[in-house]
Length: 255
Image 1 (cartoon, one colour):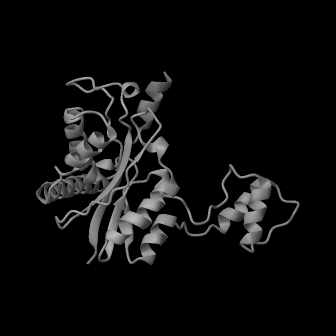
Image 2: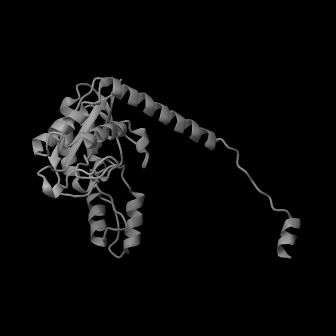
């Protein structure tokens, strides 16, 4: 049986505004925005695999600072070495989670790119074909989608479970991030705003995720998933409703 791990990136929001107070403006302090990765285990024994680095973006969202190279670096150097037995990694559908091993032709490709892909794949075509015809051939010979993240984890004995798009409520680690960032926002600045103080406060915030807290989050998430499943099952079994419009009604409408 594989252990299950939730994985997610986040960005602490110091220098922002919340309902309690306005924190020091970033221009007046050496404190930097940080990106942090973490995964936690379902058995209750937490495994923190952090990759912390400063960002230049002033946006609260972290996606603009993240790319596939950074994510793969964390995966290979931080996450995998900490997984001591076969595990199931739960992750969302961020673009840098879904970099393909081999890109396949799309409408955004130009004709030479499509031809190059066809030739590399030993697929027959004729030189007088238009781009749409070449795309149709490529579509007919579409290969199974392979992701770099999945193959990297599989080589090391692990598997990936991707959440449905736009269903972050199925990822328990979202609650952990929310709790950690709420604590961080409420206490940042108490000991100063130097880089060391910012890092120390973030680590203190993460320590609020105890094994007991994580197990509670897992149970809550399982309940949410079960409720959604039951709801979808009910909707899926609602009999089809057919409305027949008889001739009399049609005559009335025409008048």
